[in-house]
Image (cartoon, rainbow, N blue to C red):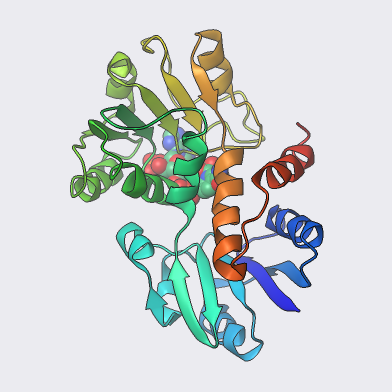
Length: 275
Ligand code: NAP
């Protein structure tokens, strides 16, 4: 039997155990996935335990995604570019860090858009999730990938990083609102609108371009205020469930060598969220 899990702090509300265990059962794999609540002071010991207990794979979530890199044997290129790890693979005690967040988001987005080639994209927010997504999307041939954030310094820092791969400028949220008709895809990567603050939206959509895609990383609620407003304006909307499922599915495949069933994983998560 293989043991897998997720480390975070706090971790109580993670849906990853349910999603992975359902898939292990459906595929008749004798594995088990659990959530480990790891205080930041215990991170080094927790990673050493992965080797000792022969835990075969871990997901890593807040606040450990950056610090955990100090304790691994190898960091792959994707995680190195992003600067954070969300998945650890244990190959006979050799711990490899990778990151499936950006690729997971991209795969989900590509279920509703054909390509990102020559598209103008704007990210609202400049935190950890924004950095992962920006690093992946910026390498898809976009015309521009701009960043708007409440804290200007963080937007500028992310823009500097993205500029290695694509044209990127940092904007204030107000300027992003006024220039919104320039963008084909608008992606909310902030936590604004997440339950219980479901009446909040990170930006106004008055200048939304006709036919734009509005995407929100949040999946609780399934349709945020931002997505409701975008839908009313005729936009194509996209929520965060797909990113969550695909990042998990990519980790599952790296650990087990088996492709999980995306529709079944999606169904498990959406049902759990009451959708
Ligand atoms: P993070 O690193 O803490 O970044 C939070 C971002 O939200 C920052 O840009 C922050 O702006 C902004 N923000 C927070 N409160 C705000 C407010 N009241 N007004 C304006 N901006 C505000 O968090 P993260 O890890 O990037 O996660 C961000 C969101 O993505 C969360 O909702 C999380 O649930 C979601 N997420 C979803 C998935 C998925 O699988 N679907 C995966 C990862 C994350 P400042 O810089 O100004 O503080």
